[in-house]
Amino acid sequence: MLDVHQLRVLTEVARTGSYTAAAVSLGYTQPAVSYQMRRLQQSVGAPLVVKAGRELRLTEIGAVLVRHADAVFSTLRAADQDVASVVARGGGLVRMAAFQSSCVTLVPELVARLRTTQRGVQVTVSQVEPADARRMVRAGEADLGLLCDWAGDDLPDGEGAMLRTELMTDRRCVLMREDDPLAVNSTVDLADLVSREWVMESFRDRFLAACTNLGFRPVIAATVDDVSAIQALVGSGLGISLMSELALHAHLAPGIVYRPLRNWPLRRTYALLWPDMATVPAVAAVLREVRSVAGELRDRFGAPEG
Image 1 (cartoon, rainbow, N blue to C red):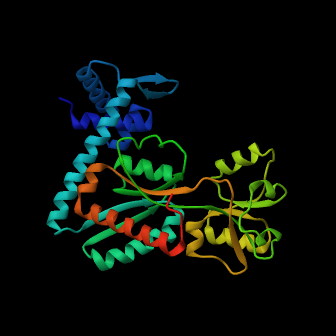
Image 2 (cartoon, one colour):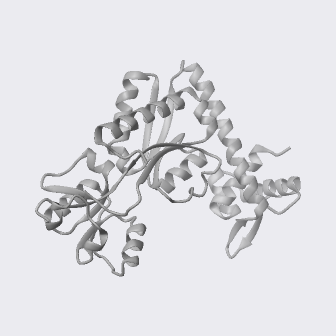
Protein backbone atom coordinates (compact mmCIF):
# COMPACT_ATOMS: atom_id res chain seq x y z
CA MET A 1 0.00 0.00 0.00
CA LEU A 2 1.41 3.36 -1.02
CA ASP A 3 1.80 6.00 1.67
CA VAL A 4 0.27 9.43 1.01
CA HIS A 5 3.03 11.23 2.92
CA GLN A 6 5.67 9.48 0.85
CA LEU A 7 3.83 10.41 -2.35
CA ARG A 8 3.82 14.04 -1.25
CA VAL A 9 7.57 13.87 -0.67
CA LEU A 10 8.05 12.39 -4.15
CA THR A 11 6.02 15.13 -5.84
CA GLU A 12 7.99 17.80 -4.01
CA VAL A 13 11.31 16.21 -4.97
CA ALA A 14 10.08 16.16 -8.58
CA ARG A 15 9.09 19.82 -8.37
CA THR A 16 12.25 21.11 -6.69
CA GLY A 17 14.85 18.74 -8.19
CA SER A 18 16.60 17.83 -4.93
CA TYR A 19 16.08 16.26 -1.51
CA THR A 20 17.42 19.38 0.18
CA ALA A 21 15.03 21.78 -1.56
CA ALA A 22 12.10 19.41 -0.98
CA ALA A 23 12.98 19.25 2.71
CA VAL A 24 12.95 23.05 2.96
CA SER A 25 9.62 23.27 1.16
CA LEU A 26 7.98 20.58 3.29
CA GLY A 27 9.53 21.68 6.59
CA TYR A 28 11.37 18.36 6.99
CA THR A 29 15.01 17.55 7.52
CA GLN A 30 17.00 16.33 4.54
CA PRO A 31 17.58 12.89 6.14
CA ALA A 32 13.82 12.56 6.68
CA VAL A 33 13.16 13.18 2.98
CA SER A 34 15.88 10.67 2.03
CA TYR A 35 14.33 8.10 4.36
CA GLN A 36 10.81 8.58 2.95
CA MET A 37 12.10 8.33 -0.61
CA ARG A 38 14.06 5.20 0.21
CA ARG A 39 10.98 3.58 1.77
CA LEU A 40 8.82 4.52 -1.23
CA GLN A 41 11.32 3.12 -3.73
CA GLN A 42 11.54 -0.10 -1.71
CA SER A 43 7.73 -0.32 -1.73
CA VAL A 44 7.54 0.19 -5.50
CA GLY A 45 10.55 -2.01 -6.19
CA ALA A 46 12.19 0.33 -8.69
CA PRO A 47 14.14 3.62 -8.75
CA LEU A 48 11.90 6.70 -8.90
CA VAL A 49 14.55 9.39 -9.45
CA VAL A 50 17.96 9.55 -11.10
CA LYS A 51 20.79 12.07 -11.07
CA ALA A 52 20.83 14.49 -14.01
CA GLY A 53 23.73 16.84 -13.47
CA ARG A 54 23.13 18.64 -10.19
CA GLU A 55 19.41 17.81 -10.15
CA LEU A 56 17.23 14.77 -9.65
CA ARG A 57 14.90 13.75 -12.47
CA LEU A 58 11.99 11.34 -12.39
CA THR A 59 12.38 7.93 -13.95
CA GLU A 60 9.54 6.68 -16.15
CA ILE A 61 8.06 4.85 -13.15
CA GLY A 62 8.51 7.94 -10.98
CA ALA A 63 6.63 10.08 -13.52
CA VAL A 64 3.74 7.60 -13.60
CA LEU A 65 3.57 7.62 -9.82
CA VAL A 66 3.56 11.43 -9.67
CA ARG A 67 0.63 11.56 -12.11
CA HIS A 68 -1.33 9.21 -9.88
CA ALA A 69 -0.24 11.14 -6.79
CA ASP A 70 -1.69 14.36 -8.24
CA ALA A 71 -5.02 12.59 -8.71
CA VAL A 72 -4.90 11.21 -5.16
CA PHE A 73 -4.25 14.66 -3.71
CA SER A 74 -7.07 16.09 -5.79
CA THR A 75 -9.50 13.52 -4.39
CA LEU A 76 -8.43 14.35 -0.84
CA ARG A 77 -8.81 18.09 -1.47
CA ALA A 78 -12.24 17.53 -3.02
CA ALA A 79 -13.32 15.51 0.02
CA ASP A 80 -12.12 18.28 2.32
CA GLN A 81 -13.90 20.94 0.23
CA ASP A 82 -17.06 18.85 0.05
CA VAL A 83 -17.24 18.48 3.83
CA ALA A 84 -16.61 22.20 4.26
CA SER A 85 -19.34 22.93 1.72
CA VAL A 86 -21.86 20.82 3.66
CA VAL A 87 -20.94 22.65 6.86
CA ALA A 88 -21.35 25.96 5.00
CA ARG A 89 -24.70 24.77 3.53
CA GLY A 90 -23.51 24.80 -0.07
CA GLY A 91 -21.13 27.74 0.28
CA GLY A 92 -17.39 27.76 0.57
CA LEU A 93 -14.20 29.29 -0.80
CA VAL A 94 -13.15 28.71 -4.42
CA ARG A 95 -9.62 29.71 -5.42
CA MET A 96 -9.33 30.76 -9.04
CA ALA A 97 -6.30 31.35 -11.26
CA ALA A 98 -7.03 33.35 -14.41
CA PHE A 99 -5.20 34.93 -17.34
CA GLN A 100 -5.06 38.70 -17.79
CA SER A 101 -7.85 39.51 -20.25
CA SER A 102 -10.29 37.20 -18.47
CA CYS A 103 -9.65 39.23 -15.31
CA VAL A 104 -11.12 42.34 -16.95
CA THR A 105 -14.09 40.62 -18.60
CA LEU A 106 -15.16 37.13 -17.50
CA VAL A 107 -14.07 37.29 -13.88
CA PRO A 108 -15.70 40.61 -12.84
CA GLU A 109 -19.03 39.55 -14.34
CA LEU A 110 -18.69 36.12 -12.72
CA VAL A 111 -18.07 37.63 -9.27
CA ALA A 112 -21.02 40.01 -9.66
CA ARG A 113 -23.24 37.11 -10.68
CA LEU A 114 -22.15 34.95 -7.75
CA ARG A 115 -22.96 37.71 -5.28
CA THR A 116 -26.54 37.55 -6.51
CA THR A 117 -27.04 33.85 -7.16
CA GLN A 118 -24.57 32.16 -4.79
CA ARG A 119 -24.18 34.38 -1.74
CA GLY A 120 -22.46 31.68 0.28
CA VAL A 121 -19.70 31.14 -2.30
CA GLN A 122 -16.54 33.20 -1.91
CA VAL A 123 -13.98 33.55 -4.69
CA THR A 124 -10.33 34.57 -4.60
CA VAL A 125 -8.52 35.32 -7.86
CA SER A 126 -4.84 35.15 -8.85
CA GLN A 127 -3.92 36.67 -12.22
CA VAL A 128 -1.30 34.41 -13.78
CA GLU A 129 -0.23 33.18 -17.19
CA PRO A 130 -1.96 29.99 -18.42
CA ALA A 131 1.10 27.80 -17.77
CA ASP A 132 1.17 28.97 -14.15
CA ALA A 133 -2.60 28.51 -13.80
CA ARG A 134 -2.23 24.95 -15.09
CA ARG A 135 0.51 24.27 -12.56
CA MET A 136 -1.53 25.79 -9.72
CA VAL A 137 -4.58 23.67 -10.53
CA ARG A 138 -2.47 20.54 -10.86
CA ALA A 139 -0.71 21.22 -7.54
CA GLY A 140 -3.92 22.10 -5.70
CA GLU A 141 -2.97 25.74 -5.26
CA ALA A 142 -6.12 26.71 -7.21
CA ASP A 143 -9.45 24.92 -7.38
CA LEU A 144 -10.33 26.18 -10.85
CA GLY A 145 -8.32 27.84 -13.59
CA LEU A 146 -9.33 30.06 -16.49
CA LEU A 147 -6.81 29.41 -19.26
CA CYS A 148 -6.41 30.05 -22.96
CA ASP A 149 -4.65 28.43 -25.88
CA TRP A 150 -4.93 28.42 -29.66
CA ALA A 151 -7.27 26.44 -31.89
CA GLY A 152 -5.38 23.65 -33.60
CA ASP A 153 -2.78 23.27 -30.86
CA ASP A 154 -2.28 19.92 -29.16
CA LEU A 155 -3.59 19.43 -25.63
CA PRO A 156 -1.05 21.09 -23.30
CA ASP A 157 1.11 18.81 -21.19
CA GLY A 158 -0.36 18.12 -17.77
CA GLU A 159 -4.04 18.38 -18.74
CA GLY A 160 -4.68 14.79 -19.76
CA ALA A 161 -6.25 13.69 -16.48
CA MET A 162 -8.05 16.96 -15.74
CA LEU A 163 -11.47 18.26 -16.72
CA ARG A 164 -11.38 20.89 -19.46
CA THR A 165 -14.55 22.91 -20.16
CA GLU A 166 -14.51 25.05 -23.30
CA LEU A 167 -16.03 28.50 -22.71
CA MET A 168 -15.53 30.75 -25.75
CA THR A 169 -13.15 31.82 -28.47
CA ASP A 170 -11.97 35.23 -29.62
CA ARG A 171 -9.81 36.65 -32.39
CA ARG A 172 -6.35 38.19 -32.36
CA CYS A 173 -6.58 41.81 -33.51
CA VAL A 174 -4.24 44.54 -34.69
CA LEU A 175 -4.51 47.59 -32.43
CA MET A 176 -3.84 50.94 -34.15
CA ARG A 177 -4.70 54.62 -34.14
CA GLU A 178 -7.95 55.50 -35.87
CA ASP A 179 -6.03 57.63 -38.40
CA ASP A 180 -3.81 54.68 -39.40
CA PRO A 181 -3.99 54.00 -43.17
CA LEU A 182 -4.92 50.36 -42.46
CA ALA A 183 -7.90 51.37 -40.30
CA VAL A 184 -10.08 51.52 -43.43
CA ASN A 185 -9.76 47.72 -43.80
CA SER A 186 -12.10 45.25 -42.12
CA THR A 187 -9.21 42.84 -41.46
CA VAL A 188 -5.42 43.07 -41.63
CA ASP A 189 -2.78 40.60 -42.80
CA LEU A 190 0.49 40.30 -40.87
CA ALA A 191 2.37 40.55 -44.18
CA ASP A 192 1.09 44.12 -44.51
CA LEU A 193 2.87 45.10 -41.28
CA VAL A 194 6.48 44.27 -42.15
CA SER A 195 7.72 47.86 -41.84
CA ARG A 196 5.80 48.77 -38.68
CA GLU A 197 7.04 49.22 -35.10
CA TRP A 198 5.36 47.26 -32.33
CA VAL A 199 4.22 47.65 -28.74
CA MET A 200 4.08 44.04 -27.54
CA GLU A 201 3.61 41.91 -24.45
CA SER A 202 6.45 39.82 -23.04
CA PHE A 203 4.86 36.54 -24.17
CA ARG A 204 5.05 36.80 -27.96
CA ASP A 205 6.62 33.57 -29.22
CA ARG A 206 3.81 32.79 -31.68
CA PHE A 207 3.99 36.34 -33.09
CA LEU A 208 7.77 36.17 -33.53
CA ALA A 209 7.52 32.74 -35.18
CA ALA A 210 4.89 34.04 -37.60
CA CYS A 211 7.10 37.03 -38.48
CA THR A 212 10.05 34.71 -39.08
CA ASN A 213 7.92 32.55 -41.39
CA LEU A 214 7.12 35.68 -43.39
CA GLY A 215 10.81 36.55 -43.59
CA PHE A 216 11.02 39.63 -41.39
CA ARG A 217 12.12 40.56 -37.89
CA PRO A 218 9.69 42.93 -36.18
CA VAL A 219 10.95 46.13 -34.57
CA ILE A 220 9.80 46.07 -30.95
CA ALA A 221 9.49 49.66 -29.74
CA ALA A 222 8.14 48.73 -26.30
CA THR A 223 7.52 45.64 -24.18
CA VAL A 224 4.52 46.18 -21.90
CA ASP A 225 2.24 43.71 -20.12
CA ASP A 226 -0.48 46.12 -19.02
CA VAL A 227 -3.49 46.48 -21.34
CA SER A 228 -4.07 50.16 -20.58
CA ALA A 229 -0.38 51.00 -21.03
CA ILE A 230 -0.32 49.22 -24.40
CA GLN A 231 -3.29 51.23 -25.60
CA ALA A 232 -1.78 54.49 -24.34
CA LEU A 233 1.48 53.83 -26.18
CA VAL A 234 -0.33 52.86 -29.37
CA GLY A 235 -2.36 56.05 -29.06
CA SER A 236 0.84 58.07 -28.71
CA GLY A 237 1.99 56.77 -32.08
CA LEU A 238 4.87 54.69 -30.75
CA GLY A 239 3.72 51.62 -32.64
CA ILE A 240 0.89 49.18 -33.29
CA SER A 241 0.08 46.11 -31.22
CA LEU A 242 -1.70 42.78 -31.15
CA MET A 243 -4.41 42.11 -28.61
CA SER A 244 -7.22 39.60 -28.21
CA GLU A 245 -10.83 40.72 -28.46
CA LEU A 246 -11.68 39.69 -24.93
CA ALA A 247 -9.45 42.41 -23.48
CA LEU A 248 -10.61 44.99 -26.02
CA HIS A 249 -14.26 44.46 -25.15
CA ALA A 250 -13.50 45.58 -21.59
CA HIS A 251 -11.90 48.88 -22.57
CA LEU A 252 -10.86 50.66 -25.76
CA ALA A 253 -9.11 54.00 -25.40
CA PRO A 254 -10.40 56.99 -27.43
CA GLY A 255 -8.72 57.32 -30.82
CA ILE A 256 -7.85 53.61 -30.96
CA VAL A 257 -9.38 50.99 -33.28
CA TYR A 258 -8.75 47.30 -33.82
CA ARG A 259 -9.02 45.03 -36.83
CA PRO A 260 -8.99 41.20 -36.75
CA LEU A 261 -5.76 39.60 -37.98
CA ARG A 262 -6.33 37.39 -40.99
CA ASN A 263 -5.15 33.77 -41.09
CA TRP A 264 -4.57 33.63 -37.35
CA PRO A 265 -6.01 30.85 -35.16
CA LEU A 266 -8.81 31.60 -32.74
CA ARG A 267 -7.88 31.82 -29.10
CA ARG A 268 -9.78 29.38 -26.90
CA THR A 269 -10.76 30.24 -23.35
CA TYR A 270 -11.53 27.29 -21.10
CA ALA A 271 -11.94 26.27 -17.47
CA LEU A 272 -9.60 23.66 -16.03
CA LEU A 273 -10.03 21.65 -12.84
CA TRP A 274 -9.67 18.18 -11.43
CA PRO A 275 -12.80 16.03 -12.05
CA ASP A 276 -13.23 15.45 -8.30
CA MET A 277 -13.41 19.20 -7.69
CA ALA A 278 -16.34 19.49 -10.10
CA THR A 279 -18.45 17.53 -7.60
CA VAL A 280 -17.87 20.07 -4.81
CA PRO A 281 -21.00 22.28 -4.67
CA ALA A 282 -19.17 25.61 -4.42
CA VAL A 283 -16.81 24.77 -7.29
CA ALA A 284 -19.67 23.37 -9.38
CA ALA A 285 -21.61 26.61 -8.81
CA VAL A 286 -18.65 28.72 -10.00
CA LEU A 287 -18.15 26.52 -13.07
CA ARG A 288 -21.83 26.72 -13.93
CA GLU A 289 -21.88 30.52 -13.62
CA VAL A 290 -18.68 31.06 -15.59
CA ARG A 291 -20.14 29.01 -18.45
CA SER A 292 -23.25 31.18 -18.35
CA VAL A 293 -21.23 34.42 -18.32
CA ALA A 294 -19.06 33.23 -21.22
CA GLY A 295 -22.20 32.42 -23.23
CA GLU A 296 -23.59 35.90 -22.60
CA LEU A 297 -20.31 37.50 -23.65
CA ARG A 298 -20.40 35.53 -26.90
CA ASP A 299 -23.92 36.77 -27.57
CA ARG A 300 -23.19 40.36 -26.56
CA PHE A 301 -19.98 40.81 -28.52
CA GLY A 302 -20.63 38.37 -31.35
CA ALA A 303 -17.52 36.37 -30.42
CA PRO A 304 -17.03 33.22 -32.53
CA GLU A 305 -17.94 30.01 -30.72
CA GLY A 306 -15.18 27.98 -32.38
